[in-house]
Image (cartoon, rainbow, N blue to C red; front, side):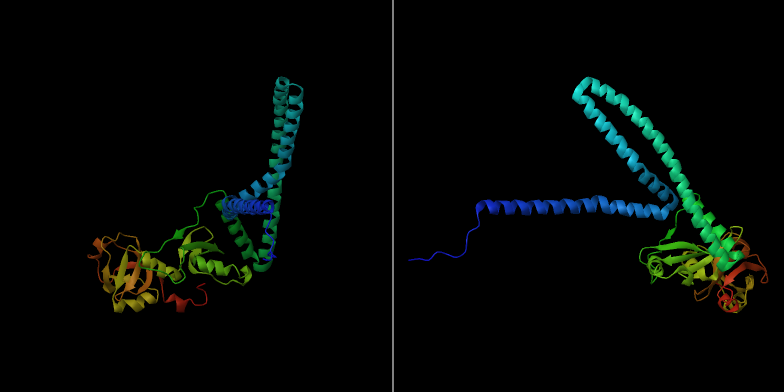
Length: 332
């Protein structure tokens, strides 16, 4: 006689329910993942990018949308309830009455939203005013009169950037034959305390972890804006200027030391010059070994150079690498 197996066979109905349940769970997971990937993540990234580029506009829009939720929901609820009630009595009369009442609600909504946008504007101005006042007090307390000037300049630049009066943040793509060690996706120009610097984006991400009062420097300083808004290049920008300089001047060994002590380049010190260099053109000064020594402005064009006396000035001095020693205490 054979013995019956101790393992029970699942009921067909239970097996069907389990299969349907698993399919429903898989469908919900796929749909949730698709919603997160196609809607939630892009919306979050767009909002973060908009706040970084236009903080004031994004703040105003966020407050406006938040305060507008309740009036919009009440408007929709009132329209739906009115429409359903009137349709139950008479379809034709209900549609006509619904249209008329909807217009009334729309006028109320328009009035409410108009008031809401003014309230949002006042709240935005209040928040910005409190922030600017606290920043002014902090800078004035920490830096004195210089802090007030710094606050005015930073506030002016921020408002000009917000309302589109300045160009977008420049990104410099190096030439294919040059790759900085810290380069990963371009070099961004930043402005801090009237100093403009270029920062590899990886360095900028690392600098976020350092508190602003404790951060002495980040990236390479290109120069400084004067109080009148003019920009003066620093010798620290020489490496980047040398990469992209269109016009160059090479000086002989006997002219290197005079130039490195802040003197102009004379015709007697000229080794060679880029062809077709115009007058009053910015140039990078090199040694005969192609080592960048500084930069300046030409006093004569290439054609006129051939007619100059040996003691005539060829390039007006602007900056040289000797400043690292001469101006060590005040360079930065």
